[in-house]
Image (cartoon, rainbow, N blue to C red; front, side, top):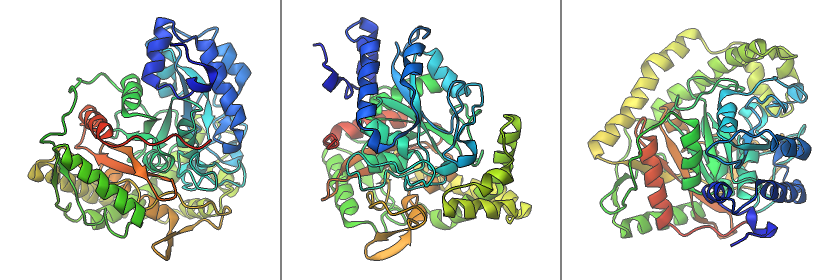
Length: 468
């Protein structure tokens, strides 16, 4: 069947690769359809850099490879030779590193077509998609709602059908949170699985890149290009699959719609034969608190400064921080300039507390004999946009709570433990907003986790497309 331009933007990445390779779909036509859709939906503000003429010229010199020209996008913290790397901050608005990050080069060498660079939360700290400097990223399912962050433009662009797959970044939830809020799939691989050079950093202990797409199969396709070769574990069967359900911390104080959709998903998995093991992860909350921000606030200033120096950027760290547009991000980074985290506290977080957190997870997987942990990705769906600077809090069950800390509450602990995590759409709220289900696997179980994710995805009802 020949796809018309109105339909082609919803083709899955895997199906597009097949059709491109077999000549059923012409790359130039596919790219033009995506350019047209991006321009028509420019109000979503998902791209920072999108140059149709550059895209068209790239088709003339595209290398042959297994992606057969598949269009993809990058979060705008990943260096590229032909486009700026702004990291969503004013001081880098026009800066071009002049080289491709290894991960970008890997996708290009595999035959991918770069469609542009998508809006991040400023310096990967923003959670709401608001930026006084670059505008507001809008959620495709409800344009008055936040997309999540910090890979908000990436998730919104994938969910809106502007591109079939993209690469974001994840420090404490930055792929999974926007994937959950925008109704797509977001994957955080085991820390170190992907090459992270040439990426604007926050924390080398926690940072990783991660694919976003509209299905787990499409995430697996991109993972297969980005990661070293790993054995295919084959398909997973839900029948008899043991899944951990740690109620403590992860299921506390949920939005009623998140609670209802998550419980429905768990019931569906149990009906398909999954064995739900309800047992808490010992000490996960205090251990996570001893690791997270101690590590980030110690590393971010040093690593950003080193990145700017190595890449001959036009500003110093101090100059860049003074131009940061989002007030709460600027305040956080100004505190970093004061070097408030003692070296001893940082060393203890790395040498004592993080290993203890990793051991708590490893012990849980072993003692409960579970293949994955299942929790809501976020405690609440997408909340309405508020002006930048007024979006520090969100309403959760009648209380105003810290937006950043609340949205990453369930994604942050496995991030600090360096574990692979996958967010899959699990349903819609009563307002028609996507809700995500997070799967967490043991260390280095990426391929197995993706196989489990595909089985879970098949069991759950697919989301309707966004009303665009």
